[in-house]
Amino acid sequence: MANRALIAYFSLSGATEKMADILQKVTHGTLYPIQVVEPFPDDMYKTNDVAEAQRQSHQYPDLAGELPSLKDVDIVLLGGPVWNGHPSTPLLRLIEETDFGTVPIAPFYSYATDPGNYAREINALLGTHSLASLGMPDKVVDKTNKATAELQKWWDTVRPK
Image (cartoon, rainbow, N blue to C red; front, side):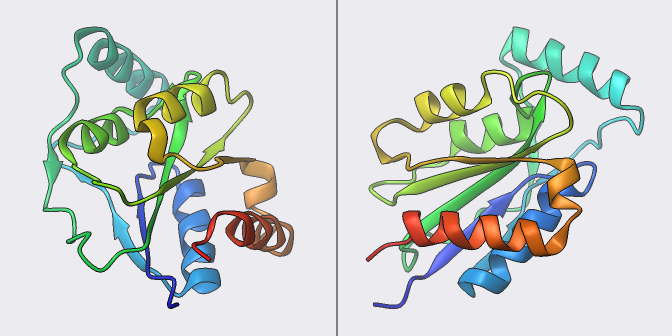
């Protein structure tokens, strides 16, 4: 069976994008960078304030473009950064607006210092189709060989058999 993976991710600092790029090489999947209509501030503290307000009001940012068809997808690898211990709000919007059907979803995420409740929150949002998540500190993401080995090991556990 060809493991047709869709690697959908949101990245602001570049760490999650680097993970997605490595996953694309490991899985030969299709990359889908999640884009927002209105960019977040360059300052992470300001971004945190914006994201916290969005989370509190459940008014997540509008996304640009459309998600590729899931028709020929065997698995979605869904990536995003940890923002103040939570999934980024663009990821929350994507989850809110997308009918993944029965396609299994394996979350991955990057974080600077503390992943907080990210894994528990994302798995709860994704429900029964959520597979084992993988979190990786930014300092590991920057070590390409180590990041590649960890992502390969994770892929070997979540990929469709």
